[in-house]
Image (cartoon, rainbow over all chains, first blue to last red; front, side, top):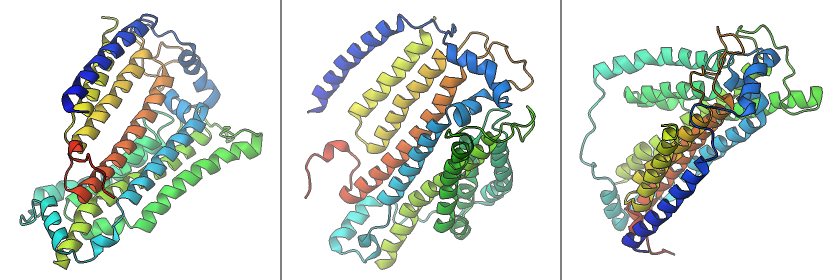
Length: 264
Length: 114
């Protein structure tokens, strides 16, 4: 398929899609006139039934909790897939032959350029942000049942401090805090914890993800029964997964090229 | 104007897909795919929107106040997570393609190598 034909083919399909889309819009309620019953029902009952004030979290970690388990598995599997695809190949640890050297050169245009060291301003800012970001990440994770936030959002925030440490030029510290056994254990503990908390309901009441813990007082940090626990488990899984992603991508640019260069 | 947000979603979908179809660089292609996926955010949130509705968070707000649909917002969270992981997976494939062939242009990868 040549590029020109491909473009025409796309434009025709796109016009057809737009026609169908506008036709489908005909029967949708106009923007701003939400009618569907489910959202309204949940908005009315979630606070009484689950003692949480953030209904989105109640949907994610209780009413639709089983789906969230699937969502976490997607995250887990794709992190594993990325780590598997980017694992250092046997060839990359050996000395390259002539042909490979040429290829390496074509790959890395910046070979002779020395990267400048991180400036003092960058170091002060990034290292000063590390502590507050860890606190903020845990704050977002543990307040998911009260205000917008939760395990997914907080987990991503928790994954940023290691990256800041790397930006500050502390490569050795970065490697120490992203030790693979540790990060993998955190990620696995998150997934396993989610399944375990879900199974509590299965054994106590006969339904997976049933909220069996005392619901507490609406508006307090310990409200929502299993919801805060599931948020913490998700936070661990997400932060472990994202640190793992950052690590494997950085390993590609730092370690693999370094080894090849050392071998020269 | 009542259809405007839906048309924005359709525009994002088409323009992202156009980028994917005509892309000459895998990194650019992955970013275009992210644009395609962002159209679903606009679509989901517009379907659940109610004029004057509050966010579905009842901290300091009486239950029963008109609020937007929490279900589509929860679905959108799923969407964001899936997009982030799909982008990571595709970028890792791009890294490996570049290492193996020295190019990121999909058009230069016509022939199969045994």
